[in-house]
Image: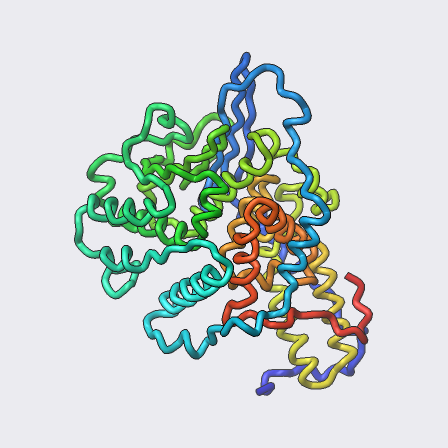
Length: 448
Ligand SMILES: [Zn+2]
C-alpha cells in the first residue's frame, strides 16, 4: 500500500538532502546532570549524579590510601582475542537446533502487549539458559501473588510486608537481600533515608518492589554474582535531599555503591510512579563495571571503551545519541524500504548513505549515556538483557554502539563464558530479530 507515496521526483540523488539537523534535541529537554568530585585529606569522594530518566546514580565515597598507583587507576584492556570471540558469538548464525519462538506462538498467550512481551522474554531467557547452562528464575509466580491477572497496574490490596517477603523469597534465589532498614553507613548518601511505614504502604513503593523483581529476573544468577550484587535497599530519597550544593535539581531514583565491595544498590521506594526494570539493569552494570575494572577510579578511566567515541566528548554539546536520532533513522529506513520496493535503486543507495552518515555520528544509545563514560557503560550494559534491543545495538551502520556492546560482552566472556553465550543467544533468538542483520547493498558502495 503506497497511496501516500507522493515522491514523484526522478530517481536521482540531486533532490535528497540529509536532514540530520532536524532532530537535534533542544538543550532544555535534557535534564541537567553533572559529576562532582571533591577531595579532603585522605577522604576521596566522587559523586556522579544521574537523573530521573535513566533512574540511577552512582556513589563513590570510600576511604582509600594516599598512594594510589596509576597502574590501578586504569581499567585493564580486554584482549583482542576476547573481543574477537565475542564478535563471533554475536555474529553466529542462528543455531538450527534451537527451535525459535515465533511471534504467532507468543500471541496465543493473550493479555496486554506488555504481558506478551514479558512472556516472550521469559521463554527466550529460559530456552537459552537451558541451552547454555546458566541459571535464570522466572518472577511471574511471585509477582502474580501481588497483582491481578499478571497486570503490574493492578496491585492486590495486600500489606507492604507481603510484597517485601514475596520479593525476598524471589531475590534470595540470586543471593540478593532486599531490605528496608537502611544501615547508618548508607544514610545520607544521595539523601537516602529510612522510608517510613506509611511511605512503604503507598502503591508506588509496592510497585517498585515488583519492578526490582522484574529487573533482576532478566539477568542470570551468574551475572548477578559476577557483578557482586548482594544487597538492595528500599529507601526514601526525597527530591529536596538530593538538591545538594553544586548538584542542581536532580531526582535520584536509585544508585549503586561502587566501593570495593560493590555489592549494594539503593532504590527509591518513594517515587511518584514506579521505576522501570531498566533501573536495576543499569545499576547492576555499574557494579559489573567496578568488578571488571577493579576500583572506583578505573571505571572512569577506561581508554579502550573511550576510544570508541573517536574523540567526540560527552556532554550536551554532542547530541548524537541513538535516542536523539531514532526518529530520523526510522524515517530514513521507512523511505529506504519503499524505494527498494519500488525498484528505485539509486534513491535507495542515497538513503543507505544517509543512514550510514547518521550512524557514524551516533556514539551513545541514550541521552543519559551521553552524561559521562560510566553512565554510557551502564546504559549500554542495560541493553545486554533486553533482547529486542540487540539488533539495533549490533546494527553495522551504528559502529560505535556495536563496538561498545561487543566490548561489554567480551568482558563478560573472559569471566563467565556461558553468560556471554546466553546474552548473544537471547538476541539472536528473539522472535522479531532478523536472522540477517541489515547490510548495505553492495552495489551502493556505502562507506561506513
Ligand atoms: Zn548510573
